[in-house]
Image (cartoon, rainbow, N blue to C red; front, side, top):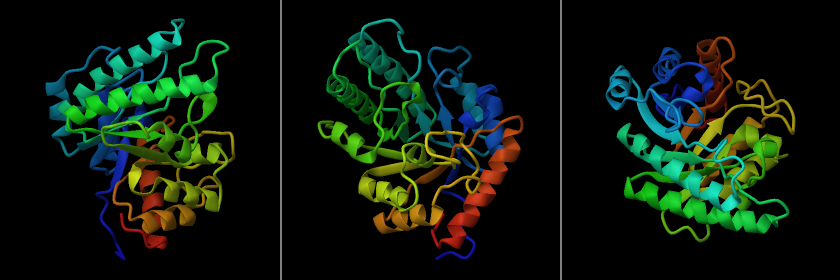
Length: 283
């Protein structure tokens, strides 16, 4: 157990400052004292549907002390109004474009929301089958670029999705390329995994857990992305379970930045570092 552990496993995310340009959002992460970053790619920053992406400029920005550990793939507003098959195919294409940008920036993990595309009156299992096929294509394309796909537990505020680790693992059963999970603490609470059940979700992921999104929530059915300790997350249950499975991945501090994202990210870094020290978990 480290008395004063290093911070190399803590990462920020440009989502915290998603209202800023990518370069400015990277500066927010840097100013918060973090050296690792997950770059957001839904609607802003690395999303191929937006303009202004210049690899050379971003490499210069990253050269000032940041390393990209992961990229969050786009998922929202894909081919709205089209059939489910078309939307799923277009989502795969959009993600594949983003994978190339992730590889250019040196990422090793890409995170995907398990979006279920369904036609009206279509059974849910058809949508889940369609999702599994899409995830397989994304995982294969990621593997070709030496990236690994991590599928995130999600809530249904943005439409049909997969909520639990068990559901995600089932969807990944037929995926040939290496793929795992990103456990989002706030989303788990949204879905009712409170108290010791949060630790159960970690253990269910086991060795397939590739990354975590760390933020708090004040109640089931809400997703405010609070600083750890401001909500009801059972952090001892979370960290004990991480120890049990031998987790060695990153902790991405995915907190809502509000009007002062640097301050909120500094608070998240300090509070979660304290939680890790208090629970004897290595950073």
